[in-house]
Amino acid sequence: MLFAVALAGPLSAAHAGEPVAAVRVAFDRDGIIATRTEGLADVAAGRAIDADDPVRVASISKLVVAIAAMRLVEQEQLDLDADVSGLLGWTLRNPAFPDRPISLRLLLSHRSSLTDAAGYWGVPLDGALRDIPQDPRAWDQAHPPGGYYRYANLNFPLVAAAMENATGERFDRLMERLVLDPLGIVGCFNWAGCDDAVAARAVVLYDGDGNPVRDDHRGGRPDCPVLPANDGSCDLSQWRLGVNGAMFAPQGGLRISAAGLARIGRLLLGDGSIDGVRLLSPDSVQALVRPHWTAAPGNGTTFEEDDSGQSRPGFQCRYGLAVQILATPREGCRDDPFGDGVARVGHAGSAYGLLSGLWVDRDAGTGVAYFVTGMPDAPPGEHSAFTAIEERMARESLVLADPAPATDP
Image (cartoon, rainbow, N blue to C red; front, side, top):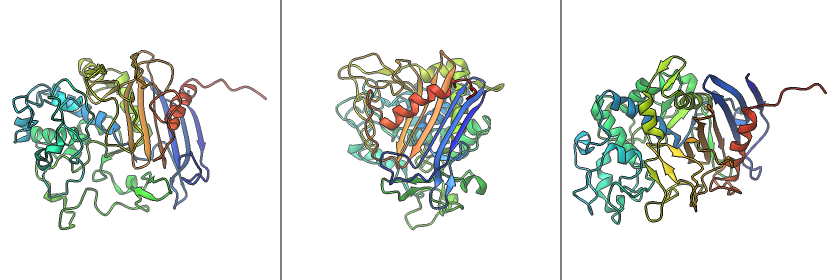
């Protein structure tokens, strides 16, 4: 039974501690079972938020990229454990450990020994991604690839470049073909693939003062959907196969609605199948969601070092292939925003004042997708390393998923 609540009021970032917009969608294997929306997608336009409005979901994008990568693994166009250098067309090595190859599996599970200290997103349209790993700051030179977990966004532009070279297709179009279109999801990476009507519904992201910082299209399309070339031009025909995997922001640039995220969650609940469409084998889903790293003394960091300050020690304690596993029962782990000890899988996102989450309980067959905007300085949570607003969205999703029956006054 669908239980929907829409509360569109005059919210703004000026209301201390409250988001500009909040959306929460609860679902099970069969579909959406509850939706709640509150606030404004675009403050200047006075446009109320809707569960079908596309938003930049930040790092949940990584999970969607990993689904596409696993499709290519199944098609034998990618190999999880081969040296990825062969697909990049140049040698990817930590200079401190030149004999240790780096595989797709290590990139997807943040065990590549790469860091974000040299950058990862600011590659112009006519630039080359390979320039970043040439900078010694791009590497953790104290730990070799393979054993140490260190969350680094840079891993995913490299994955995107490998995917382009494996298929001969531009990354954003490849994501449409492999994931978005088969699942019936209206979405795109960095707007190039979304039509005018979808772009007009963009959810604007705001800083703590209520100023737009991303996707303020004013009902139109962005002037340039990617980082312009060095001369300021924005001709996407300048794209070169496999050269700039950062162009469409695979680490965080997916625009997708909360309802669309629910379909991704249902795919995980369905062991790779949704509404009669099989996208992945059960074995591939298991490869995504099983822990490839579990926190132990000296084997990794438990928070993202390059983010907006929302990630705190204990935030990540188990990680698969672009999948976080919640509620790790180990000392120092504070990765349970729900507070119920259930080992959900999914991913969190945080960027430009947005906080997002997609979490599924595969045993119970239920899940939730949520996001809030205008919360760059969200207060910390009470019982986890997540923020207070994320704990609230997680807790309330449990109520939405099982609404109380209506009673007469």
